[in-house]
Length: 82
Image (cartoon, rainbow, N blue to C red; front, side, top):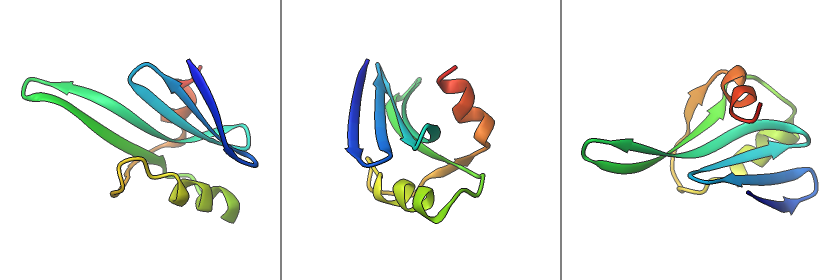
C-alpha cells in the first residue's frame, strides 16, 4: 500500500494492481489492472456522482492513462476501499 499526496485535498492510494483517487476523503476515480484471456489491460473509471467543482477538477487533473474514463456509480468506489 502506498499513499501519495498529489496536492491539497487530492490523494492517490495504490493497492497492488489498483490506484484510487481521493478528493478530500472520498474515493472518486480509479485505475485498475484487468486480466483477460488476451492479456492485462489498465482501465480507468470515474464516478457518475456530481461533486463540487474542485472534486471535478481533481478527477480531470488525475488521468494516469491519459485517456477517457469509463463511468461507474459512486458505490463502486466506496466498495473498492471498504
